[in-house]
Every structure is written in structure tokens, then in C-alpha cells.
Length: 113
Length: 114
Image (cartoon, rainbow over all chains, first blue to last red; front, top):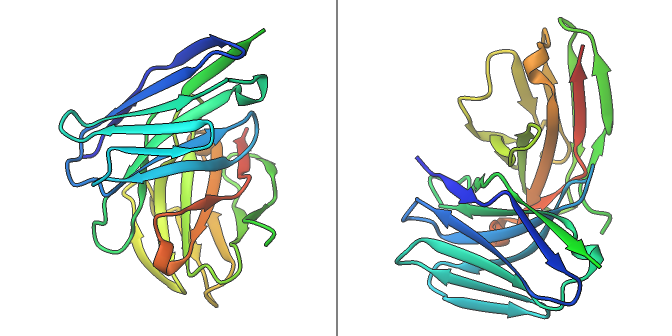
């Protein structure tokens, strides 16, 4: 079955870059996503990448995809205290019609002054 | 566009009671998903609707769980005879048919079973 793995915790200083990593097992993954969750809140879609791309940039966010190694990363440039949250990697493969998402366990990003 | 809304935001119930949650998707989104998130974990897929049709159910969705989307707009998730293991955040997401890969989540309903 599908499996998505992430490291549990990352601490960075304000102004530095953050890099959050993710590995997945499903070779039929169509889209790969990054979601952000703040305490007590739902999930906010940050960005996603189609599996035939290897990079996507959106303002301070850069997503890199290594499909051969099934490795996805999210780089946040100039990290701010407001970026402190849990970041979830997710993948979807269009099995049937669902496009259901399979999530990792999340990486808690702590931004220090 | 007011986003996905869920009601209630918090629910405390005693073991054995029935509970029902409601989700209102973004208007014109024809796909609706339910996920469950336990503490320290990522969300897990429960079920999915396209319009009013329930097209997929996870094996996590036991016989005590039932979901409906009668008019293809809002959806309800009912849990009968709640158990302590049902304590979790229940998240609803919606997406538009042509952009099914963009799932937008609501704030969730946190269920505590005592």
C-alpha cells in the first residue's frame, strides 16, 4: 500500500531557509502536496506538484521532486515565525475516481528568534 | 467564497452515544471527502462523494459510521455507539471536479469520547 514518511521535527532560525523532506512509496503517485496545519486548525494547501515535474516555485516556497528516489522536499526561504506549524506531505494516485490523499505523519517546524 | 465549514467545531460525548457532524463544502465543488486525524498523525481517508454518490469507503469506516450527501451539497457523518477510540479530529475537504487534485479542508470537528 501507499506509505509516506517524514521526519518529525525541524528547528530553524528566523531568516534562514527551512528544508522539509518526505519520501513516498507509491510509484503511481500522480500529484504530491504540501499542507500546513497550525494548532487546532484544519489543513491549508500550500502547493502541489505533478509527478512529471521536478521543480515548482511559488514565492518563498520551492518544491523539488526526485521521482526516481521517490523523494519530495519543501524549501521555505527567509523563514518567519508565522511559518511555525506542522507540515504534511501527501500523495494521490487516481485509483478509481477518488483522488484520495495519503498523508505523512507531519514535520513540526519550529522557528526561533 | 467562504471556504469549507464544519459544525460543530468541538463535541464531547459519552461512550455509547450517537453523534453527527456536518460539512458544507465550497459552493460548486462536486467532490467531498471525509478524513480522520488522531493526535500526532496525518489525516487518514474515510470516504468520498462525487455529487450525492458515495463512491469509496475506507476499511477504517466500520459499520458504526455512516456518511450521506443527500442533495450533493452538504454532507453528514454519523457515528453510532461511540467508543473511546473514535476520539479524533474529523476533517472534511472538497474539490472541484476538473481540479480534483486541489482539496481544500475545513477547520475540522474535534470529537472527545469520555
